[in-house]
Image (cartoon, rainbow, N blue to C red):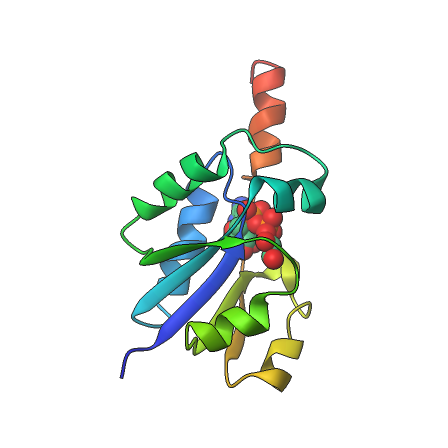
Length: 134
Ligand code: C2G
């Protein structure tokens, strides 16, 4: 029986921290759906624009061997619907989100797993380092 996994994020300036997360998310099952924040939703979330547009970020994610499907994330409120629509067994996020999505276990059959983040790398750090000429 195919085990289906979902994770959410912006994945701007794709880096090895993102890849570590996607690899371990895929290890939780056989099929990984990535719900990718649209440009508008990311701005709502982070109050800043993505460097790469949604289409470019989607193209990058679709080139990753661990990723089977990329869908748009347009709001905070679509996770339960997504989990039902895509028959998800496991919901995965980095542990900077620990506890924030536990409600999913109350209203769906999906398991919620928080995976450790890759320390020392982030999109914000990349931008800062580039500004000061690393
Ligand atoms: N991540 C990681 N290690 C890093 C950086 C990011 O494991 N060094 C993980 C995050 O924990 C997250 C995923 O990679 O699970 C995507 O990171 P972001 O694009 O920053 O995602 P975020 O803005 O947290 O979006 O509805 C949920 C939001 O869309 C989550």
